[in-house]
Image (cartoon, rainbow over all chains, first blue to last red; front, top):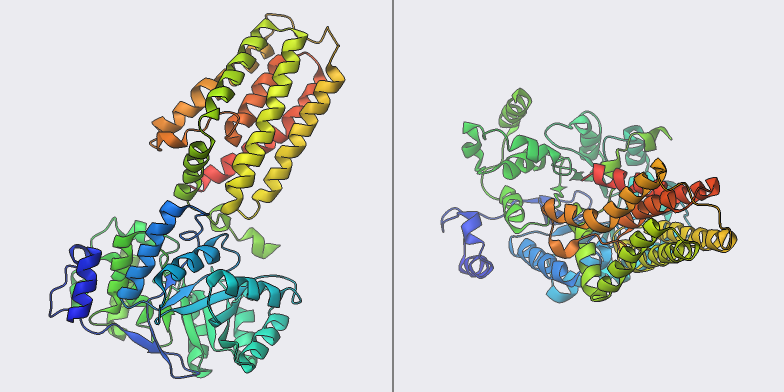
Length: 301
Length: 199
């Protein structure tokens, strides 16, 4: 841990959570976006539910602090959608109070069945976030994807957008996702991937590597049910071999250690959970054999 | 269609219990001290239900119209819509119910023989339900561990308004047409139960 990180964590009162000493704070893990070579932190932040808190200034002050800690702990990508109620507005509220935020990688979605309404929805989102342009725009759940992708590719061509992607979740419409990945020059694909939901390992993740598409893993904890369930059980002894002190780091390291996964986006509203999540960016990452041990252990519970 | 059926209610809910309960705290704080007036009106409505006069029935209906307008405009319109994108629809549901109750009041006014017999079981059940909505429901919330500032009081919180309406309407008169007034309250309670089932 360098002096700057130590001072930041001290001021945030996070040292008690992190339990790190000066020698055990290696550089956070980054992965490369295949289409550009840009590196981004492997742990991002989802905003479904946790930022949909309305105009509640007391809660927004806490979320602003949460975002501040996220960036201080090396986070980059924040993912949202117009579908998430007041989340985009509130992300903008918090980001505005933290500016300048150089490490922000802004990712949202277009979510309307009307292709004609896409550009105005995107502009609304941009104003809500308060960003000059988005880093990544994704077609939410493949809704009217043909038309929206045309819009997004045109925005990218004009320099008004950096990356284009599509999303799905809960294992839905994977055949269609594969079709888009094979036929469209997208930069990102987002789908559900966690230690129990591994269907994407069969076709989508290999295809992502082959087509040089970055992969974002959503629902890393199945909202919260997976980690709440796992916490009933002890971590395996070998967790210390991969520098995992808690289930959050264990489950997230499993995801981001897949070679084709670029980033996981756990959502949280709690500071202690955030610190645990961000801990997955530190230390030893599991190799293939270790990943299998992790699966075997979790499936034996 | 098959894709939608694969979503659970929990998947579709875009806010947390904490965010939902905070709405009650915030709306109560902003509404204070008018809760006192609303509770006084509700208590008077309970008393009038027992006294059973035509003017009393008119007051009860007017009170219920006020409660549906208030909870629809104040809680749903000003607060719930902040976190629930379909709450706009709920707002209109509450306005329609207020209009239905106002129309019922207009059309049943001056009809003097609509009351059920004094010992009627429906009257007793209705009075019990109405009493629960005014006197017990707000305290149950506190007992459940939530912040007492978020107590769900009739007039502002939609659930006790819907529950109270069922009680008051059942107890109000013997006219079968009054059952039409129960459709939206029952529908709302289904929404409420579905919401709580995901928490």
